[in-house]
Amino acid sequence: MSAPALLAIETSCDETAAAVVDENLHVLSSVVSSQIDLHADFGGVVPEIAGRAHVELLEPVVQEALALAGRSPGNPQIEAVAVTAGPGLVGSLLVGLSGAKAMAFVWGVPFLGINHLEGHLFAAQLEADDLVAPYVTLLVSGGHTMLIAVDGPGQYRLMGETIDDAAGEAYDKVARYCGLGYPGGPAIDELAGQGDPTALRFPRAMKNDGLNFSFSGLKTSVVRAMQKDPTLVIADVAASFQGAVVDVLVTKSMRAVDEIDATAIVLGGGVAANSALRAGMEAAAQERGIVCALPSLSMCTDNAAMIAAAAWHRLRTSGGDDLALGANPSLKLELEPMA
Ligand code: KG4
Ligand code: ZN
Image 1 (cartoon, rainbow, N blue to C red):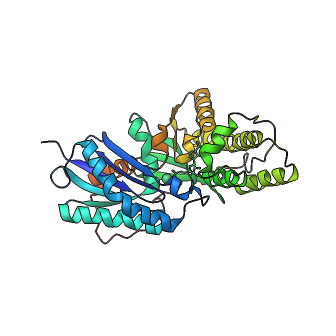
Image 2 (cartoon, helix red, strand yellow):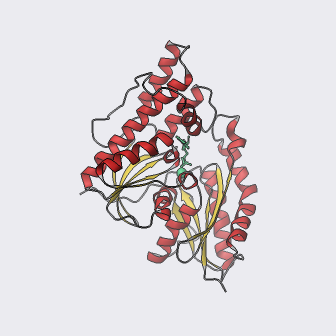
Image 3 (cartoon, protein in one colour):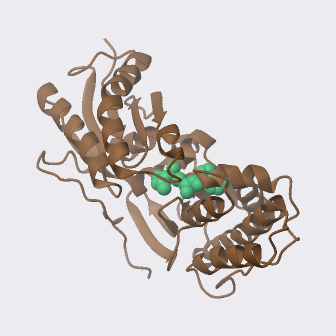
């Protein structure tokens, strides 16, 4: 008989995902069904379509995750069911929550509602379990850009965040303007490889000022430059835009590292898949002699293994949640104040 495992579900946005981890936090399976094709024609995620697609995909995705993990549904092979409770699109969150609650109830096992952002914080740790606190995590996704001091599992201090657009949002908006489709990050990343990052000098807002970020002016500068000169080479625009984003993200991350004397810089969130950001961060970390933990590409973007990792820790510290727990589209990370 196999030791009990934990099943996790993630449906906060446009990926339907399920994963199973064992009692030693080894990932036995991680299945992600992307809805990108369903939303591409609309230039972004359509909440109504996302919710309906989750309803159709949840059961087969969970069944596949269980089968790949070699576990049969229910007690005693599954010891708990976890799910993202927020932040995210409310209709999408509700599909995952209802499914997870039903399974936990019928199987008679604990139910856990997990913060999606905490999942991203755990993603790198799944692959780099030798990280030593304190370290800094740069969480860069479509909805968030945050610098977080991590003092241990569940112990987070917010050091800085965006005051307007998230980095991924800036990528998506610039890509839409350039006609590169959705999601914009991977498209700009690829195109930037063929362009000259010094062709255009875009602003680096607040680069020399503290640990907060601002990306909305950069997006506006890109649009203005293209309106002013329609003959600009798109690859040069992409490379120059990406150069500005990466410059600010790396500079501020190293400032945060210096501030708390961190042992490592850890990346998380969809934008952490960006090739220039990964290379720039690795070079800066090497210069300082600190560890640079880069999650594999599939662990950067939304997945359920990261939700399972956060749940695995919580199950062993504070246990499960009440089945009355609701979806919270604007759920915040529980943060401690900076000293
Ligand atoms: O973490 P994630 O999958 O979903 C959220 O929680 O937001 O992040 C999605 C974001 C999108 O804005 C997407 O354009 C961006 O991550 N992204 C990238 C890359 N791959 C995904 N941005 C820049 N370069 C990439 N290679
Ligand atoms: Zn995410």
